[in-house]
Image (cartoon, rainbow, N blue to C red):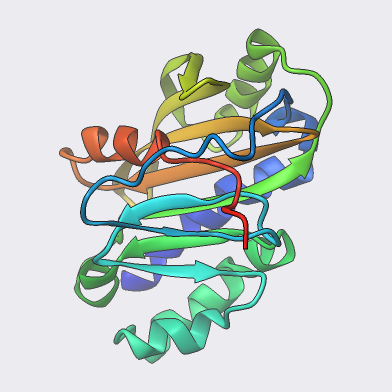
Length: 215
């Protein structure tokens, strides 16, 4: 059952990549207006990804524009069998030059690892209602229930936030997805977990989504 932990990440990402308009929307963000990182968090993501996010220091992070997923995950103790699955399921993320992160201990020991993925796409125009409606259609494709969907703000940046629940492999997964416009691109950041106590953490992580820090 451990190899199932990566399937949802790939499924949600692929839906967004196949129908780009379903995950689009755009606006403006000041490159210098970056939120401070919470204590105990680390930021990752660079210019090649188009987005950066801060996650707990105990999480394993991947910059899929340059990192080799199997090497990094083998280094933290992920089993050989799971590595075969992750190689297949993260392929769309690699093509998108995405960022990905997960709880390190859960990667090694749990049936599902709380995780994050984020990627950016070209887009034009920010219409929250239209974006939400199309995102709902994509969640419907995987029989996911959207319990919250609304425009929100990350600092001064307009964004959309959705909360969803889906069952995969007999396991209930809940998560939060953000659509954040940066200039002429929209970045989609999805957080997923099988735990009931992660909502506050997901909201804290969501408030750190920003353009990459200058080199």
